[in-house]
Image (cartoon, rainbow, N blue to C red; front, side):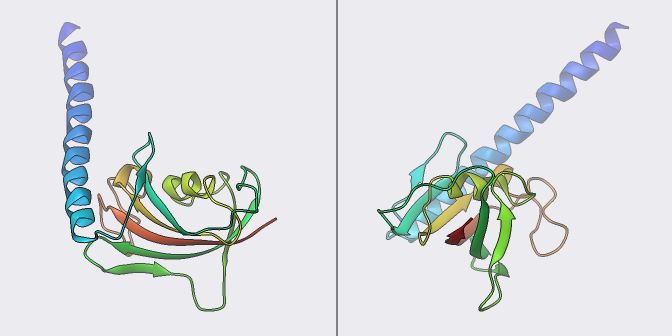
Length: 153
């Protein structure tokens, strides 16, 4: 019936508005964070990832999809709460673009070379989204990440 159709349209439009509202609120929080952290000179990608490579390795080639990544991460909320940190002396290893790591991390790694370190800000849609990770990361969290690309294989 027509009623069903209009209900469905309403819920589609409603969820778009809802996501847009979340995104606008997050962009505001990110701008405030950056205003308070003037040393962060972040670039912005089309997806909404912000990143700054602060330790460079000019000689090497960029990480590619399918490579094994050896990384170290420190994941914080914008308020400074640490959600996750790679244990000392260890690395986190995963295949680039073929793992369940946050999509913003995969995107940032494609912009990085071995030995480089970057600071990232991931809006929630590039991180754990509406639900969080049901552990340390609350729903709709913006993540502030220090990422080191230790080795590529």
